[in-house]
Length: 267
Image (cartoon, rainbow, N blue to C red):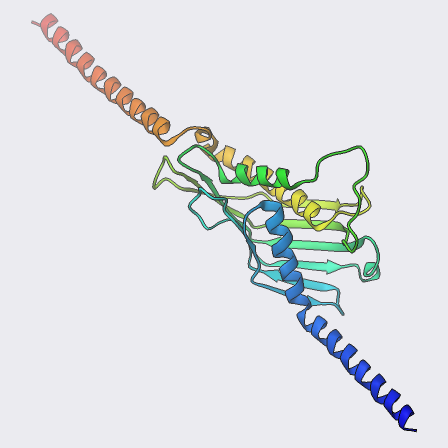
């Protein structure tokens, strides 16, 4: 009888421990997801990626991420190159526990981009793009092996809208510009390859966002200062100023000469 009681007590203790672990994981799931975003995001961009909060409602298959920021590469003044507004997600609940997991929708509202050209003529977005390319696995003819436990994703629809771009050129202090970013909509990310890993999805989304940033910057006319150091830009501005001054003085001298000749003719 004592042996039976001992077994029952052992089973109860085991159940309590299991429930405790599950409760801990459930309560810490948001923090686990946030940590994963920061880890893989930082690996992909080679800058600091931070998240303010993650809230998952598994019963509804929904989630929200707030305060996601991508740090600026070194050599630039702003703290972040991207800050993304609230991010909402909707999961395909039937795909949970399967490979790949299907996300029906991701919505990103009001992202803000700080585009900079530093005193060496380099842009922070180009440096970030190079970092992303460097973090990608080397191409090969063979299919890449999937790491054990790695979750692969298919994203049916991803929308980024309401974005703003702030453009700053080190050689033009006090002449910052602002523009609206075009709406971005991507569909079926990862479907072609049977699912994409988190870093692969990050590369697809960031590369598209960077492409749209490039288009917006070109419209602002800021890209003409790329690959030009501060001294070169300053010299060019001074040369233009001298040219305009010379043209203005030349016009005034010409007008004076013409006026004098006209006066002589009238005598």
